[in-house]
Length: 499
Image (cartoon, rainbow, N blue to C red; front, side, top):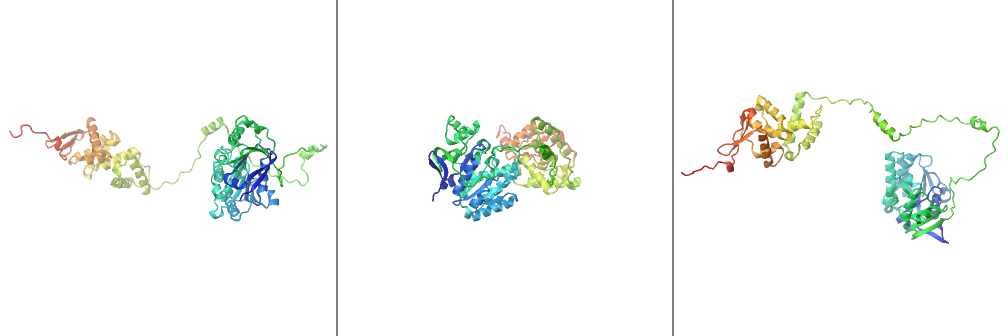
């Protein structure tokens, strides 16, 4: 079923807007203040009233007069945001045409109210996706291209609701019709979703250029927008015309409450004109004193000065958790580190990753106090990986080994302490796999290269016995390991064998 909306005169013929096509393609109206945008919207609403459900977001209360002639219900947006969402849900359920009057609200409250109502329309259940024209007058207020004086949260909510209306509303039966004074002030992702356009009088070059671009006109033809009369628009789109079509909008039945100002003669000034201004009339109510206005936002250099002079407010320190005794704290951290190293994947993790796990586990175990730094954690990790026993831990040699390890890079400290432990305990030389685990790698070749680096620095001396078994000596400790597993490829070849 198709229905045509008679917009007005188009060169002697009626300009007909296909309502069925409009429901699928959306409409954008642009024109400076006084160009006749509200008159165009009123004509469109009157011509389609009773044919399709309508909802009007009215920031100035201009369209409430539709209620008297066409049965629209006026919704005063003076309630909570949740109440507006519930009203919007009932509007979709019962298919009632409404005018949401935002008159009397400041800019931020208007944005929040519009976002709540549009969100309620958008979130309706699938069984309530009936076709509806959603008209938003002064759309640049609800989908601004740039941040303004309102909060970021209000702008985000309003812009998201407008984007949903224009981008995703079609599948839910919502046909967005938005009107704006300036295309440059309207968010591009909202304006770009419209397929039908009605461009009215405008004077700024940037707006004329954008309007001409949307209509497929060249730069010279853009000058025509300056010459348009009030109530005249250039139409283009699949619901109106496939070529730019000048349209003079026809008359309306209802009138706006805010009609255009007309000239009126001034009253005759009498001798008591001064008293009329400065002397209160009998029974005149006494107004309360005005509230203190917020200080204007500083600009430019003043902001930098304000930031430089800012001092954060002093806050009371939160009560610290009861710290464990030092001995108990060290014991708990040692247990945590042992649990981490017991994980099969710990050898493949970097110290930084293990440190994050260590900090989280300390919080879980409620270990109070300042957590150890990453550098200190590396030292603890090196000692833990060395596997030092109780016998060696209390000796002077182990204290000296830790002093030597402190002068080495963090990643080599664990490797050195493993060798030092074996030397102090006269244990066999660690295998390549043990050396790799102490270094935190799975590559035995890389561990041997680091062992060679320690030898270059004079921290250790490596040799092999006659069987080819490795032995590592630590000169500063005057100790050496026992022979490890022999390497047959390194066994000396005896000459003159069999003589």
